Length: 127
Image (cartoon, rainbow, N blue to C red):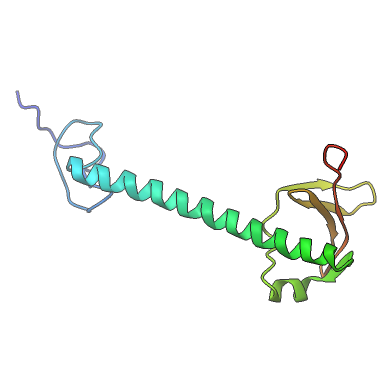
């Protein structure tokens, strides 16, 4: 009896696309394909995480600059031109005034379709 039986899942390597034979639970044609695949997946996740942190940092810098200028509201289109991306937030909740309350770390704000307003910094540990 041979140990090399066709893989019931189709036997196609997800990294290189070659067909292979082996155990039923075998997923890759070789160790090198397995390592390349997992290294690529880890790198993609790391890149995604870094891009997300970069977008959050950019949003925070823009909101912080507004607060330093003593502005508590701004046009969303104007902010987007400056690099603000409303999809990247660190918190969201339904506010008591029927507005959605958003957060970017310690800065909170309300958002409508065209503006963000009531920009304020949370007091952390009495500061």
